[in-house]
Image (cartoon, rainbow, N blue to C red; front, side, top):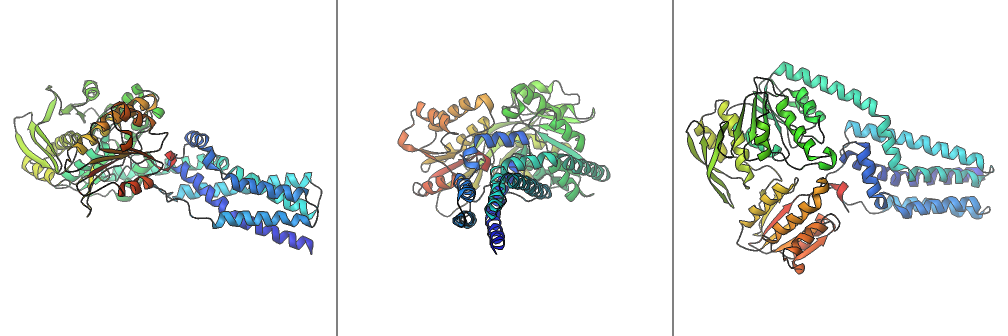
Length: 542
């Protein structure tokens, strides 16, 4: 009878602990996905967040149950399984975790990883059970203690075992990767669209969207959605959406290190390459600013000799790189230059959009109005206009297309509401240049008070603290109130604000966007304007 009771209690403990273990595994998988399945970055996050990665109370209770099962005499040791069941049940029934800003997506790869983690966990827990069972005297209590030991070790190693599963599955994932790359190349070779590659430190997605909207007024166009700018993202778009009727395929090309844009160009083979800007981006991964410059220039270096390179003429580094182009090139905007094909004059920034005159090197001029916010969008429009005009779109049609442009989601996007507050959503990402432009845009709304809500910028390496202080100083000149998200992450922004004379009683620091939004509700009134600048994913939560 006793063995039967022990087996039942052991089964109850395993079942009680299964859900919390799986929930923690899903959280580990979520972070791994946010870190793009890169093991080194996953471990860097884990080391920096080790206090929040493990539920200490759960693990302590598990260890206590195991100790009780080992030292208590029979039949008092029945307290151990009761502690184990109670602990697991508490964790299984506790309230739901906060909703993720970028939820875990159970892709095929994520499901394979979860299966790999289950296998690694079962093997590890089983080995611990067998080892402990061999060390303890054979009894009902020792059997239960061995089960607890296996579960405890499995709980302690959830994150390392997820990392191990990622490494073990790498050869399989690489096989899938090569298959999808080959399949995408075949689709491109069969459909043969004109491929336009868009690269740069900033402005890629906005330029891509503007160009796609303008070209779509006359041609069938496929542009990569959102930020599908990685090899597998591009493969998915090509394999699932590219059709023979698409005249143009616009591919956004992203990179975190040198060589990645070159690899993307080998896949899509662009005939036209656009370099939007070069600046400090992902420095922690690129390693140096020189690597950023060389990495972004790969879009131009990969073009065929009869291709066309389009550079942002307002960007000094782009102008310097233009002379190294292996194919014909033109500049959009910037100072007078033999290769400047288009520029803007009489630029007016308003709270409803942009007004300026398009000037062409052949002498043509046209007045345009675009319902887009932000000075940077002038250059984005000019860059897209070069491609549109060279594709055969008449200048008058270009002007009409520009007037009908729609803002890119989460990029200086006005959010309509019924409470009379102007909400500017610039949460997709942030960089020093873009943040300054966003503040310039906020300054145009003068009917009421102006608020900034931001978690700051990331991946600027050694430049980050100085960039944050400068951001704080710039905000002090524009804002009536500032809410910073993340005390550690935004400390330098607060320092910049105070240095510039910003009053401390107008500065709030919160730990989450949800908390910041709740505080805003008590502050805002009709006529006020609030800028949401950047929204970091869950792996940056403090």
